[in-house]
Picture 1 (cartoon, rainbow, N blue to C red):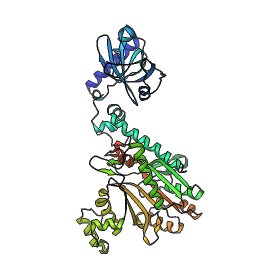
Picture 2: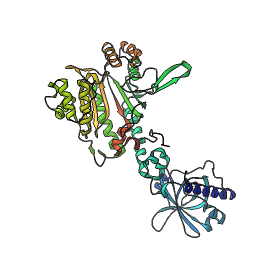
Picture 3: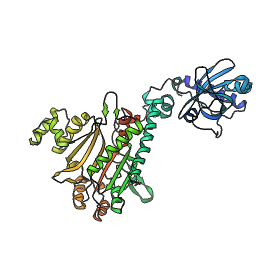
Picture 4: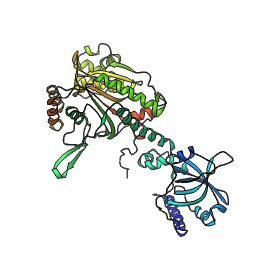
Length: 479
């Protein structure tokens, strides 16, 4: 709309709108009662049956005293046929001023063309909403990635495959809720504004609560509130909602993202592994219809699951003797593998860098990585045979973390030590009320978080997180 060509097209459409108004057509009409959505109407096709439908005009082909056109709604397209001697000269003339992109209502009856296409013979038509700007690229597709993300509505109109991805996302969310409801999990809601952000190691977004004259934070995770519910007697809970982390944008990260968090009293890390495996297979079967997913370049076989200890993966990549080396030698080994290290990092951080940069991306088929260093997961219970490790898993699929799961730490004294060590000088990160809740007794429990955006990426074969978020965060346009 910032070019002379765009302005000319807009001016022409406004002129067409005035012509339609003169002919008695309201450019922004009222509700139109329709007999159903296009997919349902087509499925119930009956020759000669009368029907009412509404949608966006997307193609037209004029043939003298008749017009073939297509209208589209959120479920598909239907061909319509207008004949001058059937709808009348005035209505036929007015239709010439309908532009591609206009929403119209139709009354007519079904018939099938000689080529076998279901078509509606139009008896009357009405204008429901005038499109003042043209649709992208004459419906052949919208390829400008910047426009696709910034103006998702145009992307959805021009690229039918995009709608399929978001239909799959909608189905994933619906199936997750049904799957958990069938297993007696209760869906709950916990605060999105928190006075102390906790439950993960991440930088929060800060906001201001004027009525209380205090800073608040958009939550980075709901974990500490969900555990409070375990203390209060909810024994199987989940929350499916947004988290916010004030960090970078990338192909795998958006600062506002959707997480599923699940907690089960008297469960453990193993019960969470079983649950997430069953859930992902259920989604693959019901939503995708296949257990072969991922991208064309990195196909994923959901029939092939394995479990492997964190240290074993490090030894495979950094050498059998890696954990016998001193800190300087470990740093040297990590640098040989291509890692960039912060001078302040100790052995745990150096080793984790090897895992994240050299190992994680190689784990394509589903892999439960277990027995992580305790320093990395302060909210998890130590392994029974080694307190330097915690009883957790990280589920890696397609080279990305999809879900971490824990045997949850319910010892309030050890939890206090861990959180104090994690907070350091940052008192903002220390939630004393959560520790008070733990001291009232939290049952042993299994818990996990599932990154919904990454899971949808995996199932639909999408290569960037922006492709599965309707309105992803974007940098401001450059001037």
